[in-house]
Amino acid sequence: MGTPEFAVPSLEILLRHSYAVATVVTAPDKPRGRGQEFSPTPVKETALRHGLPVAQPVSLKDPAFAAEIAVLEPDVIVVVAFRILPREIFGISRLGSFNLHASLLPKYRGAAPINWAIINGETMTGVTSFFLAEKVDTGGMILQVGVPIAPEDDAGSVHDRLAVVGAEVVLDTVRLIEQGKAVSRPQDNVLASPAPKIFKEDCRIKWDFPAERIRNTIRGLSPHPTAFTMLEGKVVKIFRSHVTGTRAAGLPGELSVQPGALEVCTLDVRLAIDELQIEGRKRMGVEEFLRGHRIQTGEKFE
Image 1: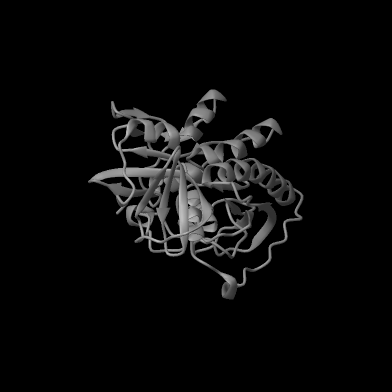
Image 2 (image 1 turned 90 degrees about the vertical axis):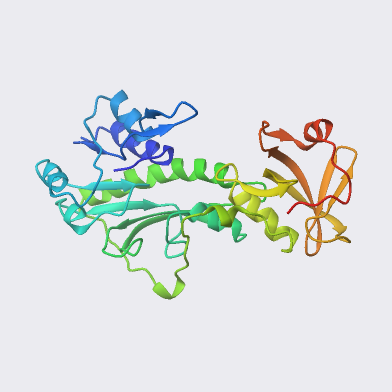
């Protein structure tokens, strides 16, 4: 059970190792792109390419869906980046149902663990497999693997590494369950931290924060959903930046334009913008951006 690109390596590794995938459950097709044409999820595309049956329930609480899964008599239900399963579903599998989560639980429970780990300046993250329980992301942990977050990483690069490492953890977890050796250990709720869904307001840059905090926010939201600010009523998305050693003498958000460089005042020092996209234009490096836009020192990001 999975939906986005993150779940694809986990499905593919099980197939490569000849595990019998009885069915693949994913989200319904959604309209995407400018034409709003209905398109399948990455997991569905992968399943169809391998000739696997696909289920796309609208409601996971529909008794008909539970019956559809029960008739398969699954040994294990593997969940990677899917939805919250009710007990009526995860309780069907003979040997248990487990989830792969993109953090070192109990830290960063929730929908956006990769984003929040980087936003909060973490230098280490990882993946955890755990047996499903009633409360989200609280079940007994089976395996964990740590993955460092480099200073230049963003959510996209960490996502891609965790998807590959996570697939190996999924395979190892299935093997342990198959061999009757899967020992789970409880999570320490005292150490838990939240990683809630990212909303639009979370993405708006607060220029009165320290520069390093702003840089981490930009990294944690790049390339999607992307940190943004406003300039003369237009949305400016910012994908990459770096902290300068120059003290911020102006008001938060005030711009300093130099040859090939655009710096912004923050609470402490200036933040240099490296890659951005203004509303209606393509994503570009700062030098290209400045060649095409007349921005003056003293203007402000809002």
